[in-house]
Amino acid sequence: MEPAGPAGAGYNEALLHKTILVGDSGVGKTSLLVQFDQGKFIPGSFSATVGIGFTNKVVAVDGVKVKLQIWDTAGQERFRSVTHAYYRDAQALLLLYDITSKMSFDNIRAWLTEIHEYAQKDVVIMLLGNKADVSSERAVRTEDGASLAREYGVPFMETSAKTGMNVELAFLAIAKELKQRALQPPDEPRFQIHDYIEAQQKKSGCCAFA
Ligand SMILES: Nc1nc2c(ncn2[C@@H]2O[C@H](COP(=O)(O)OP(=O)(O)OP(=O)(O)O)[C@@H](O)[C@H]2O)c(=O)[nH]1
Image 1 (cartoon, rainbow, N blue to C red):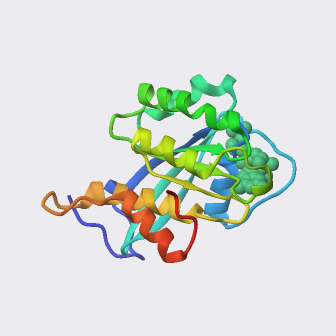
Image 2: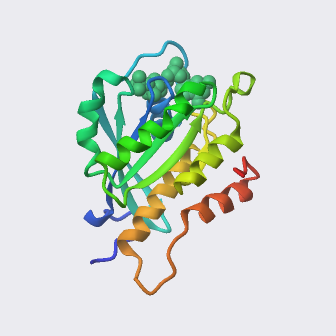
Image 3: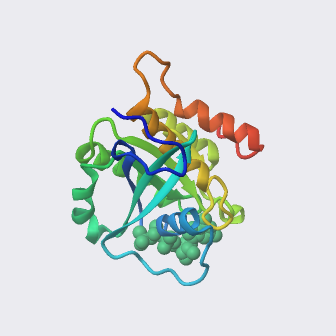
């Protein structure tokens, strides 16, 4: 496999990764993607995603360009059969709930069952508790999110598509994991996504996650 060039050069095909955002309708999937892609939050009325669409985003990971093709799915039940078809060739899945909605959190187990049914076995899954800025309406404790994530062996963090908290970190951690899988020599120690997230959060003094 050819190594990718430094940032500024093109990315190599091994570093094009399909990532999918999933979770109940209204948890903030589109908003998270807009915040990551454009660095902005559009407040106001909620317009549910219809079907599925994608945004390409190139990020530099350790001087190497990684292209994330990020698919934003509709959370509404009636689109489920459409979105399942896209799980199969995803390398990563960001699974969101809304920290102000207990129901969206309770549905995470069902989402994980669907993911295990339709996605590849080695897909990278990350659990995100979004809308962390709305602390006055919190309905899910941070430790409950962390403990569910531990149970399933997936990394976890709380995010805010409004303030941008942890948004870049979530996508960068995914990009780094996928890049390491594609390019890391087998004799080097494996990249540990949990340790990376924890270290980055400690560094920024933000939001340690149990
Ligand atoms: N305060 C706050 N509001 C948010 C945040 N993320 C999303 N919202 C709001 O929540 C509502 C739903 O957000 P969307 O991004 O459309 O949700 P979605 O998950 O894409 O919904 P579907 O397309 O139906 O699956 C919108 O009114 C957003 O402005 C956040 O982090 N903080």
